[in-house]
Image: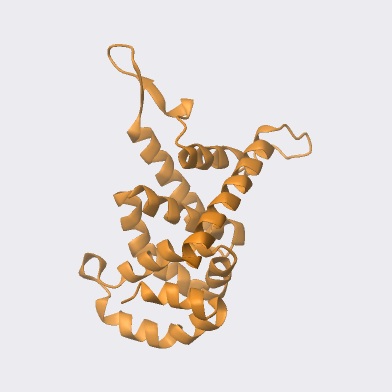
Length: 194
């Protein structure tokens, strides 16, 4: 029960943070350099998705002139964000890492099969590049633990690969995970490997 409460609180905090990012991304700032990487548009996409609000950039008219959500455009946007933040996570960029894990959370929440498959093959290699940053982010944002653990476990056996590596991974990482996340959150992550 306490975990569900923490997840709900995390979602509320995340929504507030995303709204703040959205607002900051919409305001002009003459001090920003041209071509700087901004997350305002990404935050708007996340907030719209979380709130179930139709974003005008993903609407198109059908042959009758009726406006409808273009699911292909939305899926392309998810793919674009996945690739962008995966690259940042791979370089150890903490903010990019957070966004990357958040996209995984959203993919799990929305049952997005394409993104879930990508995470199932990519998350363990990213974890192995920088396990400390990965786990510190999960400690800071515990609502990401469930989805991250799910994808990490899926790596072992996804597309009939890596199943034999799971026992060694757990043997080498279990205590480290518990040390960084603490007993309760560490157990939550490790429970996904059962």
